[in-house]
Length: 626
Image 1 (cartoon, helix red, strand yellow):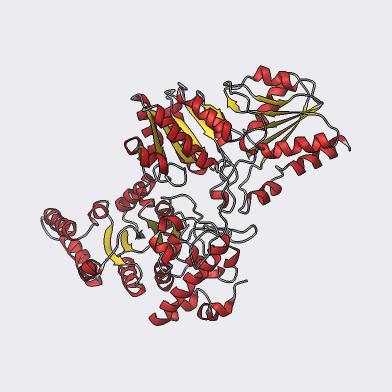
Image 2 (cartoon, helix red, strand yellow):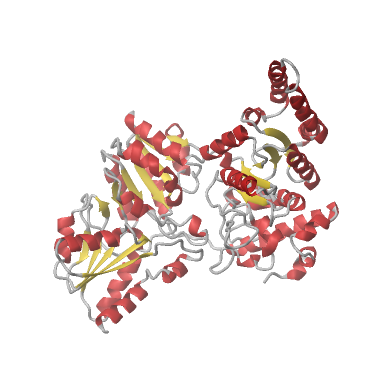
């Protein structure tokens, strides 16, 4: 439970209804307390700090104008939804943010009736909002619908598809564009306020609407409407950045100071009165109210626990990460081959490509939040003779599934897909776990799939990929390698599994970074007098199936470890191979369930999903000690 004495005004309110009753002085106090709650909780649990601090006033304005149980407020990506959670119904348990059994770091329909739509990927809010508007119309409901989208998420093609559809249908919906890349400084503040009043005022908006209506009723109205529209476009394009949205068919309001609740409220009243699609452009400061986050918002976008006074992380993880190992190898490859290029979809920091971008700027491409484009862009680079490496999180790779099949694999182009955050990612939960890539990539023809167990194998597999003449995906985890450092490294041979031990009645097969659990299970068996083979698969495709079957022949049982869903995964593949070879060896598959896994630490979630050495030992005892 939260320490209510620390937040006296928040604690005294019946949320969210009482927000409508507050004076603007009290609203300012609520904004400060809300920021304190966010900073206190994220400093302990980690999370998305800067983006949430930037939208506190936007959230308050929305809750003063809307009824969040009837009206629908959709937060794109929803990593900026912390104020909304606090100010609706989750203030009392906000300190459980991202903890196992606690509240999610993203909006979830199952978590609260105030969460209109579950989001974890960018650029979805406008599409979802428009669907809700259309369903409301069919049901005869006149509830408000608002989609809040950031300027980064607006770069995604899906957002523009939705805007185009919304503009063409003229449905009554409001899009709030949260722009935290611009700043309204003192030199232009007065002009910006004046322009905002010109464009946002209810009088001017209603006049434009009335003129258009009148022009429909007079002779030659079509021609006059065209002339009036041209004149209006000229004026808007001269004074505002909103002409693009106007051309798409949305009324544009802004830019508005995003930390003045009264101004945002006024714009919302105007937008809802208009009766058609409206985009409100608010300008906010990312990290607002916490100096370290304001000064370095990129460092506080997603952060682990930190010291509030200094902004420094509480725990310095000095161990090397998979991401860092990948980034270092990319620099090495680019240094010896000038055809190597790196691509990221707005994840330069997260995928470890900072150093590459600095050293080889002409060979580094950040396409923005455009996973589909990034994949086909990589295919184009490959056609022209470059050696593209597309670094992408597993969860975001799902968006480019069609492009992998049609633009890369079908044409057999040597695109290297480097899959970060494969498997469980911890506190970010089901929207971000890399649970599905193993299964959906396995079925694609021409695509090689490499599964390194440690940094040495990642290094070797990236070397192997350099001159690979067809598509290849390399899958690795978040965090650090768990593989023991004293194991000898056997040179790679494409398609060949690594046999670490080969004896006994049982076989343990590991697929990729979860090798640490397989290794622990091998040791448990060994300590209890059960000899077993330990096989590091290394490759899902190509794979020397005959060699693998020969290694498994005459075993009593096989235990497979993987951090991906069961259906279509490595365990099922091996079970099928064994069956097709006319063997009747019992195969026990330790994998993620065919379900969406909640949030929590990786250790907690592995235990929950029964993919630990301890669970494998329990299973072994039940089966063979009976």
